[in-house]
Length: 461
Image 1 (cartoon, rainbow, N blue to C red):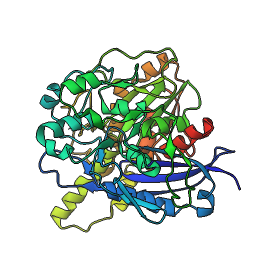
Image 2 (cartoon, rainbow, N blue to C red; image 1 turned 30 degrees about the horizontal axis):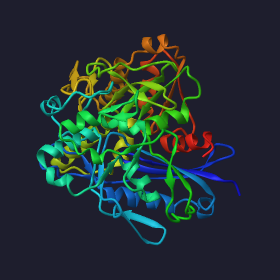
Image 3 (cartoon, helix red, strand yellow; image 1 turned 180 degrees about the vertical axis):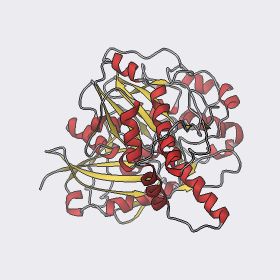
């Protein structure tokens, strides 16, 4: 039988696992499930947390849907997931392997996600300046640690390790002491210098930061360890790659030439292209710039317009309608059914003069920005027209952050689209074609789970 590479993506709303045929680089099997892990009670601090145990349970259920006879021939495991967020755990007891070949979450905190809003602008401005070209924002791991250090220092004393959710899973699969993290995830935490590939330890230590929680750094595309036990049929001793960022893996799955840009719209939205091999990022953060530079592979960088407002803007609109129907006592539709009806009613509609700016979550370069609706007329408020304007606004916002002219100057000749929201929403795809002068094409089997498996395959792991 062929050998396979297992790729796992621990996303914001779902978990996906795929089996990549190592010989053909084709996806042979895969399964995805929603996590339903969001926690609602934030105590009024604008917290966004997810239940770590539910994420791990969803991963186990995804694995149980893959053919065991193929899992027994997995030669390596790649793990990716949502960036910026942080999980804390206790070494040696961070998970429980007593249930056969399934591990469950043990002494671990909830996941504080990239959407977390507890760090206000005033709080962030009180932190020491990072020695990095990437600034610090709410939802970044190091900023969250600083918040706990100020508001709940006793919480930090309960844990001995920390990482992203994908780092946690890698550590549990391999039985690692502490956490191993790649520059891709480290940069997403802040206070990490991508030129030296080192944490700003002196700066952090001087500010009282618990530096023992900082993960060890391993190369992006390298191995973190080996599976400590049989896992759903995957043999013990199987190499596990150090966890990668879901954005970089998504790009890797579909950027076939340096003249490609990649438009990813899932929960959030990103538009990116590869910088020249000799590119060096700025020496300090550029907080007002809508374009950042993310570490990729082999010391290269991606220019990224990363918007906080993507598919979640459409989902927020759907949630608003559901809340209104509840208040009116109207018959309810399921979430997926309502979403499909909204897209269907907008397919043949034009937005007219109606304009929706969907920045309801602000942007990292403009955190106080709010959404707005303009050019409202009595005859232009059909549901289909509003949905069309909303989808147009999502793309217009990304295009304003990284205009087509900048793409052209960088040598970009086409845009490759991927992401769950683009796959699900035909109106977003229509608006993507309208928003940019470059043609927009769509790759097959392009996603983060496939991308992380491709990384290991191409490196012979």
